[in-house]
Length: 284
Image: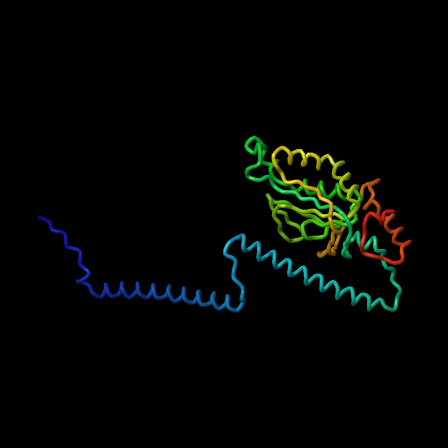
């Protein structure tokens, strides 16, 4: 009978066993050493930075939003330095100063005056007829905010803010889902628009806008948030904070830029001195 040779056991070759154990032990030790080095480096970096690193997308967005706010403050400080240096450089040459009306239009000055506050919000989970409604009709969209802002300008708004930021001619915002991105910052609903001007005229501007009225209709049918309130006390809008560069812009023929601005300037010139406070009386 043919007998196959038996496989050599580990005990037959103890040097192989020692070799395997030695290589395995070396590999594990190397991995542990590298892991320890990485953990130590991360801990040292965390202590050096003093900040807690974001653990998810929400925390990352919050960190970036705070960074944008901090940089915006630095931009304001640097802009003030540039203005002082420009004024010092032009001290020997007369330079024309723009009127207060144009400074207000450009958002350079903070503004105080009567006006209205418009609030828009997504439909709640328990809104009526939610199951029968188009899902898009349950959210506040970019075009809804644009319609409100344009209607307020058309109603004679002299200054405006969206959330906590001043809106000027170069302002642009974008809605991604139910998140609003404006000047590098991110906001969630409810969205608040504040406009300074004659409250009656501002309301008429909202009523005259077909796009706004479509939103108001959906608000009544599916429960979208919608409210327009007159300010009990004068609204206070901060100056614009952000870049002002503009490559090119055109205004369609027959469109008046900031209705009532010329009348406000004439009223200002007739007054005893310039003021950054505007209101309906400035149009008289």
